[in-house]
Length: 481
Image 1 (cartoon, rainbow, N blue to C red):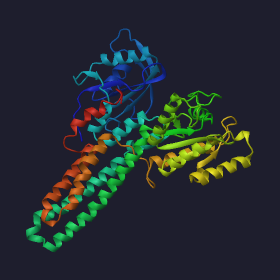
Image 2: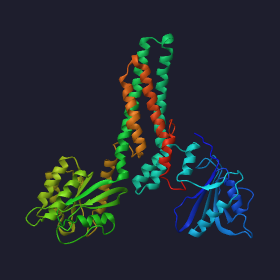
Image 3: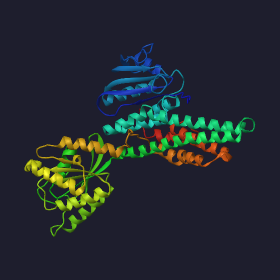
Image 4: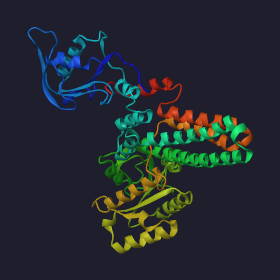
């Protein structure tokens, strides 16, 4: 898709504020004019070759030096935006950046169209209009910019590199091919097609579309599962009072995020914190220690109630129990047994192993396996004080996180709400309706395929009416992207 963009735009593409280097981008028909007037040179540098240049304020007398910069010139259409594009790598002081931006505004355009500061996401918008990127790639770039963890980065890379685009385009091509078969049946049925061959043709298209529908539903299921990568895996710490839950939370957080005290019951409410654990975004909740008896007051009872509510909302439970056992071990084991029966993923950390003999730890491990029904590798002996067993625990957590965020045999797939809405509201219903039609309703069946193809076109940016979603997508981008 190509759109005529006559104006030349510029913006700071790197973060604002002090830095060693800041990057300023220029794109459009007067990009070469900007370069020549800032450098007093008559030619632009070779395509994609880094060149040192002294930047000067245009039309100043005597010439006012702005900075000594590294310049990169990309000849369109072989650039990010599909137009002539210039990158100025200047020193990152705010005054330097401001002076260079002000000087770009002073450039006299040869095209006669004023050079202006870019709108949010305008460089990417031009890349879209010039056929360099589709909508899924652009949203993937947005996700990559927002990525906080390694798993988010990897999943975003799939979309931004064009993998999702290829998947959607293959679906659309498959639907269009089957539309062509049915259209031929409609147009030439009187002359060339008998009922038998028509039935065979409809049967063939149903087989093809049925496979496509299955692929699309599987893809949607993976997208919905992978959404946890973006929102965060909800994990709760469960255990007896003073079992070391808060100490373990502080180790995972790599800072003092919870109060550590010898006094039992110091955690009264759910202490929630966002973490990067083994490359995954985790929303970890340190809950009140579970215990009963007369010592438990009304406030602590409320904390325990909230802890149980949190367990039900969690994707995963990490239980912490002391290796030497405690008065409340039976209560904790009973709680874990109920959660295991509810198919919650559970990992148990047997803490304080530095205080007991190995055979005591092993006996406690066997008890947990027998009474709860957990596999051996889900029970990890650790010591927060001695820092032992923590790497094994992290490896187990990483393995469980992978199960939570992916469907077996598939890689994580991040997609925007816009993509999911199109699949759920348009593409899948149209294909399901198509599967209900027979030869007598072939015209209506073909229309359902057209709607499905149009829905996928809206996902990639090839659909009619795509303009209405562009503003919402690009408004979330930073100015220089």
